[in-house]
Image (cartoon, rainbow, N blue to C red):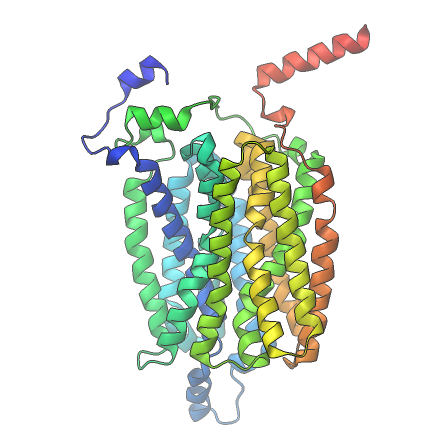
Amino acid sequence: MPEELKNSRKTSKILCCNLTRYLILILTLTCLTLLQMNSLTFNFTVICMSDIVDDYHRIQPNGTHWFEDSNMKSLVFSSMAIGGLLGLLIAMPLMHKVGVRLVLSICGVFSVVGTILFPLAVEFNFISVLAVRFLQGLGISMVFTVLGSVPIAWAPNNESSTFLAILSCAFQMSNVICMPIAGFLCESSLGWRSIYYLFGVVTTLCFLIFYFFYTDSPKDHRNVSNKELNLILQDKTSTHKEPVPYLAICKDPCVLVTWLSNVGGNLGFLTLVLYGPTYLREVLHFEVQGTGFASALPFLLSAAVKSIAGQLSDRCDFVSERVRFTICGIVSRLGLAIGYIGMATTSSTLVAQIAFTFSIAVSGLNIMGTVKCLQLRCKQHVHFAVSAIALMAYVIQFGAPILVGIVCPDNTPEQWGWLFMIIGVIVFITSAPFPWFTTAEPAGYTLPREKQMEIEKQEELEEFC
């Protein structure tokens, strides 16, 4: 750390035993988990909201409530994806200018409003339901980008994989926490509406803490000691805000192959996230509370697998970075495809549940494969590369309900079998190029502009000679 930076910093007397970065890690993980939980609530409560239909028919016995229309329910699922997509397009360039802290806090506000107002919107009309789901989508629009950016700012180089693994556990922990709580409250006297109020209040409290404690750089945090700052900055090259080379990134074969791999991976993972409770309830015939715990178990295993993989990735320095992220990518995608094909070809409830659990458990390694690859390749521009993955994810979230509505209109095991077979094949095909065309070498566009120009001149001179 430069001596002038050390002398200019003002630190607090409370230095958290040189572990402030871990408090930042836990706080960010909590906030990302809550954003995901808020977006997942409808995925579960859809199986225990029949009271709104009963209340509607007491007033209009011959009418049809939107909840009875599968196409309208699909729109409710998709409206969140539209919010995430539009929010990402606005928030990504905004984050490049103002940082993670402000943008993620704004996302938290949208998520809280959408979650707390959902029960009221259900009583009002269908358009209001779409509106609050849209707000929940705005809330999760920056989750992918944040989990790719925070480790770069706050993690020492030898802890970056662990930070990435733990932050990405938000996708799993949200299900682990949300599903059992939702299952319990759905069958309690408090009812399904209490889930939204509880999650909304907790999200508000956590984001208030986040706003006042988080900083975009450890240099600016008063509770980061000079010793800890030196550890975080060790072997890191100082980066200045530069224009993002959008075209160069979009033409990079390594990035393109990684994006392609995520198309299949996100389709597989998000289908299970969106329709896991429905599949367990309608096809495997679990009870409501049992559905909550059966939905949560695979995500708990996935978080455990991912955390172990992150630790191993940071410690196995005798193996190249490329080998490490390639192994994670292959295991994740191949395991997901095998699980889907297993669910598609079995008539056994037990085998289907095992395949369902296995698919989700291994899919957690995806982040350790693809996002780690993008971190190494794109460096300071990783926020754009990861945002593109989020963009694809929201497009998939919008399209998945339409695909499910077409292939599985009656929720029969045969229809779900065809859906799972289609998705399994897509996962396998889109993931096949990943091991062959990726690299851990930083791209030329990550170098300072002066260095890039120097290299270009040298190449021109060599060609001339």
